[in-house]
Image (cartoon, rainbow, N blue to C red; front, side):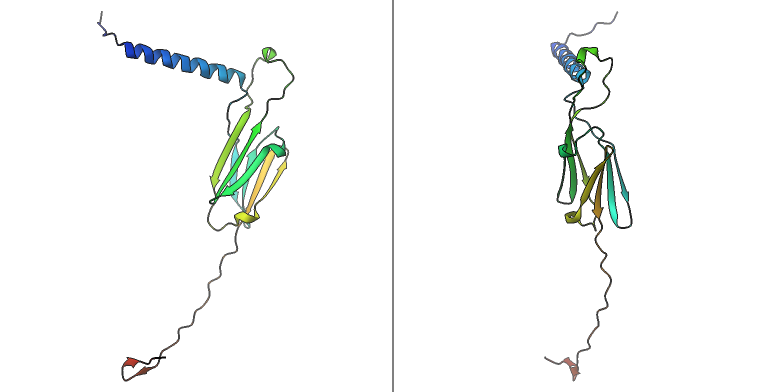
Length: 153
């Protein structure tokens, strides 16, 4: 039989871990005030960068979109509004509560012209691309020289 040295601090750490697991388990069992992240697809089209987020069951008034320092942020809250008594549930797997997603916008877009639409639980955000600057030709003017020195103008 091995002799193990007793460490009171290890016992306190184990107790702290058990209490944390207990609280986490209680919060997960209710499923109401958890934070969650919606699934998001971001893809490139010829004239815009498009973002689609799954926000099923949300009211468009509960969704907020903002842009700051070329970062697009979508945040909101999905509310638990079922009329079934909590004790009658066998399982709650849908996520409820607040969320926030932030995505860096690529260079060459016009954040001031962003538009958004919500249909069948899908939020679509369109970020138009800026028109590319066309290269322009710059002519070079020759300067006159007098006896090897540049002439003053």
